[in-house]
Image (cartoon, rainbow, N blue to C red; front, side, top):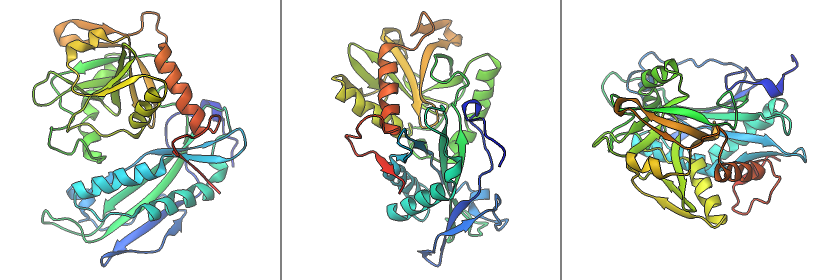
Length: 339
């Protein structure tokens, strides 16, 4: 294997040795299979291709100072995928099978888990797709669950540094009673055009307002939003926002640090009152927000005048990372050690 420059990895795909697969046929999940192929052979009328019957998750494994590999909140990812399955009528994979597949694929690709303090981690991508053939709009009768892994660096080039974002009113991420609360590919396809526009304008990512009234902060392209003021961690509550496992973790850590936590609608004008703000998710962990521009209304909400992450974002980021790497006690039972 070519020597990997761990400290200069991008957040992209790198071929690893194996992936694992489980098929659902005739009403039951089969045995776990190990594959070295990067390809899927499927029927041209598979429901994932025609009707978007697909779900995915994202989680990470970290190598600690002690050499042990830790996976963060594995069961929560299994539960969120099951929730997505209920939302778009796919066969649900039990948590213990999800766990079996994730731990197996990490063990098989152990040499790709980056070393401690390299700034990189092993990204784990569980994928569930409808493979049964349908030309009518119906759920499939066959499914494939697959887990691939790839070593990754920081999601944003600068790592833990502040970034500028822009509000777009001409786009909706998802409808209030649509699939926004589920982790389905269609939500991300819907964000690609706005995301490209944001990048072309020099922003890290786009921000969406709620689709119904265009009054409330909804979600960043691929992350949840949170704001900090008066020793309070505030994050939007909405029926169109994906429940982020990272955000859930940060809310708990904020409470542990003696902060108040509020989940509620956040009107756009409240942005001017926040001392700090961030976008959070598995890929980026926390991306502290330097400013959010509302170009249409010629407004700019600035959260970092010196361009540096604020003290609360920094404390939360360091605390979460310390738990993930095993540098601090796992008081909430979030970590699974790969044996």
